[in-house]
Length: 255
Ligand SMILES: Cc1cc2nc3c(=O)[nH]c(=O)nc-3n(C[C@H](O)[C@H](O)[C@H](O)COP(=O)(O)O)c2cc1C
Image 1 (cartoon, rainbow, N blue to C red):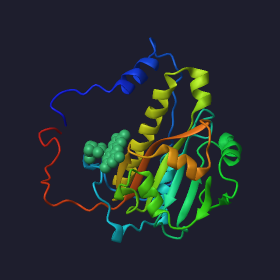
Image 2 (cartoon, rainbow, N blue to C red; image 1 turned 90 degrees about the vertical axis):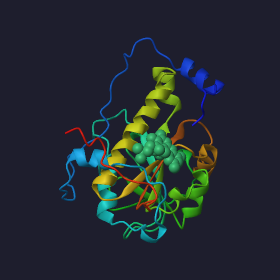
Image 3 (cartoon, rainbow, N blue to C red; image 1 turned 135 degrees about the vertical axis):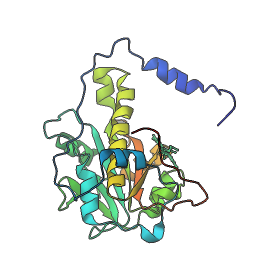
Image 4 (cartoon, helix red, strand yellow; image 1 turned 30 degrees about the vertical axis):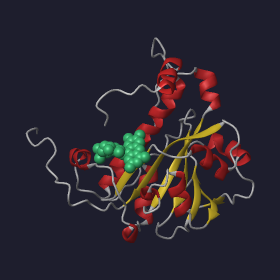
């Protein structure tokens, strides 16, 4: 929003350190779309044009169905053969039909499950759920923790759920070089975009959360080294629309 560019040395240093001359890294295919879906008459064009970030979530209408929750997770389930998949979700479930409120892990690559179990708090329950690869870690109301970790933003507590993307961190950077740091962010970003679109298709709202307290999140989980790190947060619920903002059709002159 500034009129002039403000240099931020740390960003320039990170850019320089993670630069590569050629993009010769293996390309990943992260997502599968062959799961059973809730019937939907919206076209992908409608969904893309309608997608907006929620500025505020409606706490009174935060409830979503288990079917909606499942579809959101399944839309970002990794392909079974994706051994290089390294993004997992720690989910703050606030208000999802039949699921107990609490802290959950959604494991997107089973090869990491034992390491995650070993490196996180040993009093976590790891209780299996009906949704494959979803585990309840701790029961309870995590709205205020989700909010605090998200730089005190209400969007993380007034939603149906919020999540942190916990990625394998040290090993990919050691194996593929510093540029992998960016690749990990891109991977999280792609998953976030898919969650945005899926939420929109379901008539829900979402917001990516780039402002979060990673050290607090790691402490809450018991992570005390950089084997896994949280790299992006996200929240899904029902938005409060600000009626003072006028809405227009996006790109009305284009078909
Ligand atoms: C990586 C990323 C991080 C974001 N972090 C936040 C955040 O911490 N808080 C917030 O209110 N919105 C956040 N947003 C939402 C942006 O503010 C929003 O995408 C932007 O204003 C454009 O609006 P739109 O998504 O409706 O097109 C984030 C979006 C992205 C993609």
